[in-house]
Amino acid sequence: MNYWYRLMRFFFYSAVKNHPSAKYKHHLLSFASAKSVGIVYDGTSAEDVSSVEKFVESLRQKNIQVETLIYLPKEKNAIPKPNTFSGKEVGITYKPAGEIVEQFCSKKLDVLFALFHHENLPLEFVTLTSQATCRVGLYHPEKTNCFELMIKPSDKNSIEENLNQSIALLNQVKND
Image (cartoon, rainbow, N blue to C red):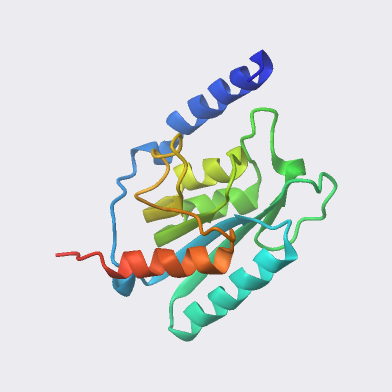
């Protein structure tokens, strides 16, 4: 890693550490008891967007409130859309700004699915500062502080398979 990137990461994690939601207590939660779900993901793949939209619809049919936040990193000049933020709203330290991100982070959610395979600091910021009771993400050895439950990504890197695996594991959690 070069010097500037390490410096930006330092300021990024300082912003996360000093965020008001940093004191929020997270814990594992059974999916059966979830009434609200959040999903954050990189929306550059049309296949991923389609898979998430199908998943959202299936949850809404079960009367689960669903909030999504889509990150479009390459669209620096993107026109703001509902539940979407772009590279234009991300600062030099990779901290996202804007009303859409702030509203999403301030919502109390039972489960938050963070669906990004590689390091994605803007989505990591959303995950770390969210007020979700249980945060679920894909396994990465350096990101264990981000999640209460981490799953091994499927070989195909299919969001649909990763979501199904996450729900299967969350259904095994016993909350007393």
